[in-house]
Length: 457
Image (cartoon, rainbow, N blue to C red; front, side):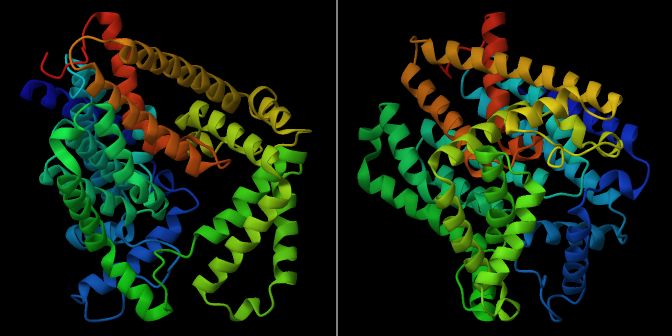
């Protein structure tokens, strides 16, 4: 209903603007360490846009995808100022629109689930905090939410329009962060399985399904084709980004090693830098994509040497931290409190390190904020678990279709946790928040006696 849409939009905008007014104290209050890089890339993109594409390229760094710097540059071109406050205001509007898409996602479960899910997203601390930072996360969340909503719509009605929307939204998310490519590569198979689970495969059939899968794939390729063409022309590769090797070698491997034998992250990074340089002849002459391939190969060998137990432990710790980490500690005023960071916190094991960071933190105010945030996140997870259990167990109406949509949400949450691996914080949980908001709405709705599985209710 229009009144629900208006309510969600007003609550989302009001909460984000109130938070911005509370924390804003100049450019530094909108920035984290990666923000400076994105603003520098946006300056290149702005020069390219100001010349109508006749001078230079949209950006020179192949380790980052161009959509977010282009977004920053477009805002700068529109308002005529490089002040980061303006793109943050634009992000607040975009994130509020994402809340409406979360409501659409929840509405497919019937009753008032859509309204509750939209309000849960509108008041979600994780979304609110990251919408006010110069980072790719809010833009990526917008496209990822649109992709999820379109996928849910396709499961309701497998039509070409929904398949095209999945491809366009997925392409937009991929053009923001390359991490999405495994999901897109397997999405057609997942949707086919979910359509069969919903009991609607016969009415679609292989021919229609393959045609719509091809349409969605073509939309993804169309969106990302400028980056593919540029990288092929300049670097001779079809790869999207040259960032994954650095991430794997200096984040994934050290954190997996820390989970396995307790070696501190900083020490592992220093040792890996020396070891990689010694075993990679001509390192200084390698281009960005050749370096990326060398780093990936070296990281894979190091992970294999650690063994499956250490890797599984690292992923388990990462998932637990991802689900429990509060976003408030990444708000600039809280993050600026002087204390030892999590990765630098000493500990005899990963668990000891977590306990030390939580209960023996060297800044008491930060520790209290952290613990309060963790308690809130745990309560939210309990509500989401309740929603999942109750919604999956209902058998009236079109229960099979409801389970198919639930399975889509669970697959997305699992994917987000899997690709984040041992690198964990509220930032890496953010893409899963739309699905978590719907599960919370199902839990709260069942408590209030609303939100049936049948979308016709």
